[in-house]
Image 1 (cartoon, one colour):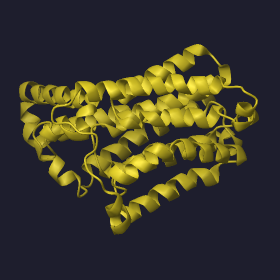
Image 2 (cartoon, helix red, strand yellow):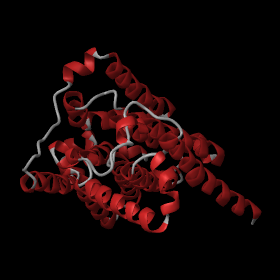
Image 3 (cartoon, rainbow, N blue to C red):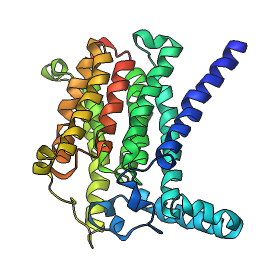
Length: 333
């Protein structure tokens, strides 16, 4: 009984309390070059409804309404604390923190469940599993030096997609595949990284040997997931056209001449290699296949993203830790 109680306490501390404190420190304990301007924005900036940001409808909707709700609550119920609250940042900044920390903690909970599904090797030990979980959390928090209103939401849906992919791999229940399709559909309204769930699914299920035998069941499942991504992706771009564009800019040259961007690229490579080095042969095979299927995303961020914003590598880094911790069935490799 005491052992079960102790495990629950440890799970709560390592999954909720410590991640929350780390996230809180990253937003209010120090200030990065990206944060200085954001803290002074009194409302959701207009540029979030133009360019590529216009297609991130769920984060934008949450930002508008949480900022308004927070301002109303403080002005009407906590007016005595208003000066202190605004000294730490604008209502928009605080609302960004509240949205991000909520989805960050949900991500931590789902990651905790994934690490317990089919733990590989040393992860059978609870203490080692907690340590791997905290390392993954540290990586996510470190990348918060570029706070946005969409990355933590997108990461939550991505990790939730990993969870249902692994559940489907174990049980082959159509309900899990349908739920995964729904997650991809919704997360496409958050950010384009939803496509990486398709890449992970393909890495787990598509096997060249089965394709040679004419077994295309996994390909058909991938096509279902692709439809779940393409429908909202194209729909948003047909509906939202005013003051919107597909990309913010072309940065491919800048990515390979700026020392900051090169440092960001190196960080992304090493953070993914961290998970790869922890993996066994089966996990490494999954990561290699995953990199192949996610190559369109990697090419896209090379051209239109900035490597210095290492948040772009968050899904890949987390995937590395998941691949290292999960005991894949041999016939998936």
